[in-house]
Length: 281
Ligand SMILES: [Fe+2]
Ligand SMILES: [Fe+2]
Image 1 (tube, rainbow, N blue to C red):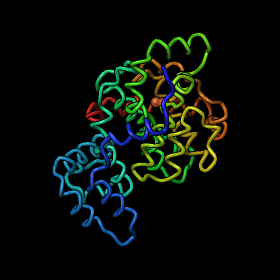
Image 2: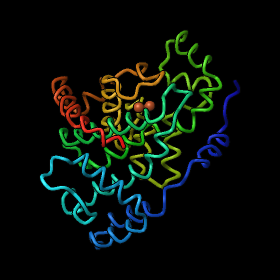
Image 3: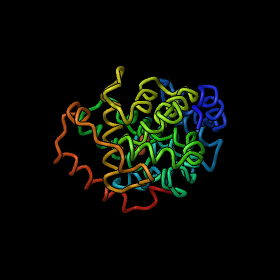
Image 4: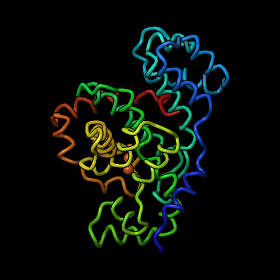
């Protein structure tokens, strides 16, 4: 297997769909202090499927609210601009995250379950650790493994080599990817996030999710993504061939100042949340 070049990666990243225009518009509107719930409703109403999916996700992720969320305006009032923005982004990437990834031995829908579960965990963890942007933590975690979509065919074609390197050199799976291809799924995922013009902190958190001590600009965000990913894997949510091959970084846990007991408490909370299978639709 010859190493890949940056051109190979960029070409592959370009094959991924770009973010739909409606998502870009909603992201702009939620950042503009002058925009209202009405404006966002307007923008979303251009895409009925997206609206329906946003409402379904808002209800299943926030079913603790006593009233049912039946319109976009309701959703904005009840869960806020930023939460609506994350749901719009989640709805728009759900289709590609649901794809089968045979290189990683993940069936259809498995990466989506893993990503969604980790992202919801990250939101709880962000709240618990008083991280300033709960929704940024959600979005970064939702997208953390997006590079797997790009790396999938390479890993599939060199599957045995990757496994051999993992076993013989005792490397983690992402290190083996790097050894064989010159690139690993976190770094490639960062390239996807860059292409989508997502914020720099988010790009860093995706690129460093298996090596959180490498984060410089927002180490806390990266630590949240890392811990949420590791805990989700421990819970067996969306395990592929590599699922059990990533250690939990003690540095990340220390940086967040959370205890084992805190993590267990959050795990119990998330199990309750996922009883509602609608979350994964
Ligand atoms: Fe990963
Ligand atoms: Fe992951």
